[in-house]
Image (cartoon, rainbow over all chains, first blue to last red; front, side, top):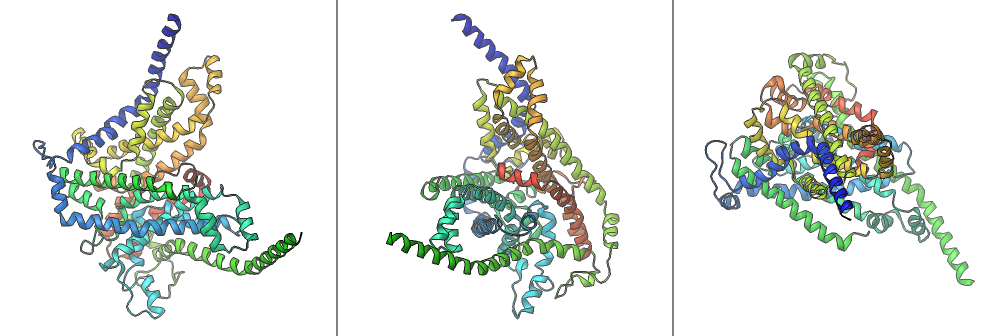
Length: 299
Length: 292
């Protein structure tokens, strides 16, 4: 008895040494450059630090200021609107494309490649292209619109009413392919027999889509909706290149504000408080989704 | 009996009806597919075509997809007026070093979490998974202060370092290694192979799909990354390709054909890699479904 106990503890010790030797390179970097910054960010949001001098704790002051900060409120609302526009449309189009490109189409690989292509390209580079495509006076989109007889085409990126929608369009275009691939994987688990049964009952493609495909994909839809939500809350590259938050503040989103506050105005404490709110909002929405899934997700 | 024949008749009618509808459906189906794929690809074609045009020909409707005269000189100008090759090399350096480091540190870490039993294992792994939820934007400020304390700001190292220890890599490898049966490891232990030998000679060769996934995603992420270089790099000779693009927008504000030539140059490497490793890309996305 005593002997085996000794043996296990010896084994534990041996395993521990081996395990930490394997873990060391990553664990060290992880603690210093990821875990510590996460904790530090939390504490910094209760300080008024600007990079110089002593770190002063100010309690909840940053958060009280944020509640009254009009610029912050605008960027918060913009981020919400951006999410409301881009997430549902991205996911819906991705499901439609995945269903259409699941099987029984000629050149299926070419079409899939085409849809996935935007996702692999650098947002900064393609944003430059979209800037020209959206050009209100000379760009091809308005060229097309006026050629079909629309006299007052929108000003897209240079109009405060259309700028957020324009950025959403580019964001949706860039991401559809990614979600399409996930849905294609999900569709492999939907048995053909369900569609065959529906054929026999005389169901059309739209009925089949809403009554079979969507419910059968619901776990994947739930999962992708959380990823898409987080992605859209973190949008930055496209905004930075396409509009720089403008015109006015019409596309000033949360991360754009955070980067500006921290690295242009050096208000590190205040920016950390904004980042903490970003994180909390992501957590809360994920939590709500998670609670809500019980009602609509079929496992 | 009566009921069955009646039902069969209904079924036959429905099937016939759906056959009639079938052709119509097929046409709409192709129309939607072609339309959506066109929307995805046309911006690239437009960019390519604009990059080879004279300044005065870029705009104008209807679009002239094939330029009258090919202005290859646009590319020559882009590559000579700014040190584009330096931007390329910088991006490549960051992507390569961080990918190799991440591969090394996270496969070792993943092995410890998947194949070695030690008391604190689950707690530490939980910390890793929990930080995967935290957006980069939350940690970037303290990270920046840390890097400036160490004196690494305005070099490539901060970007390489923060990319080399991602929790995602450890998570990916851990999940993959768990699926490799323990009996294989036991047999190797009996044969006298050391723990590192098992990792290096048995586990790694079996993990090519996971390695390929990580290489592709990390390389692409580092190549396309904009925020980290924007924060850390100020000297022009250290610019990555994405920063260089932004620099271009300021420099060549209205020289649109040059801008387009620069954009084409910036995205061509990822497009080539994508075409070469398409299967891995797609498997990677559908297997992991995370990371973006």
